[in-house]
Length: 375
Image (tube, rainbow, N blue to C red):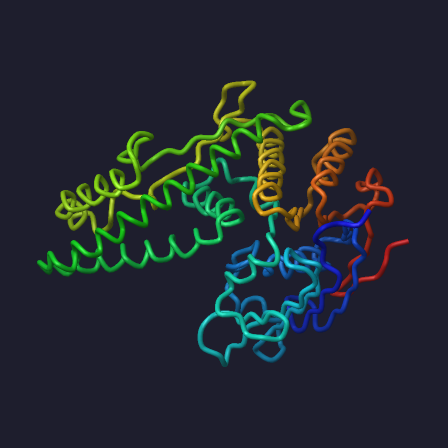
């Protein structure tokens, strides 16, 4: 079956444990099998850099360079993207200033945000299994990636808010009485904070509806989603009212924030609360297996939301996705992923775990930084 968006070629140079790699893919799902440490997840990480940010491991770019090689890496991809066939290159050099560079059809991109015009990339990794029990900051970053996939402007709003907040914190910590500067920064924070809150609330609401309306809710438990923190924002009133309330709170809280050494109220203090609906238990108190199932259901719902809002299914990177699922759940998962209509890359140590995919996937064996079609 032809797919509406898929990667057709991936070339790596001095990336992680790959000195050189050049792989062509068919318009199908891709399964990567091999021993631990062979380089399966490294390939997925390279593909995750088709989106803004530091990829699925959030590693420093310098750490992505192959050990012992010149201080740079390069990734080149060909894909049938959201705007048609496109060539995307990205890389990083220790000799250059700034972050990684992005080229689209050979031309330098103004920013990595231009990648969102061509592909939306979602991933699920074993490191995310602890999301529900980890710190709120991890769930906030997870939520913001969900928002960014359907609202490309969200990333810039978040960066601009952080920059304004740091400037305000610096003025307060220095003990300077600069009301004009503070008023300006707080007005900017209020405008951006209200927009960030509204974007998060909208996506959580849409996602909650899709989670509850999954085709097979019995396979993966339904999650109830809610936002916590930033209580000054309410569901009533227009955006201007929300901005003014937050601006007033910032002005009234200057001495408190100065004493604390940080801003105590704002979108940077929010959290995503997840509850197992059938059991009415917070996700953080569920068993490890239940948490995994909740996360899978949430990612699948988010993929549907991206497809519906962006008009194209996302590229899905599912690392070690089948390891802890029984045969029935694996088959159901593969059907749900396939129904999305996009391309998924999946990894596992045992090829037999993916038998239910049949001819819907290409299978490659990964060994010591090289790939070969599996028998």
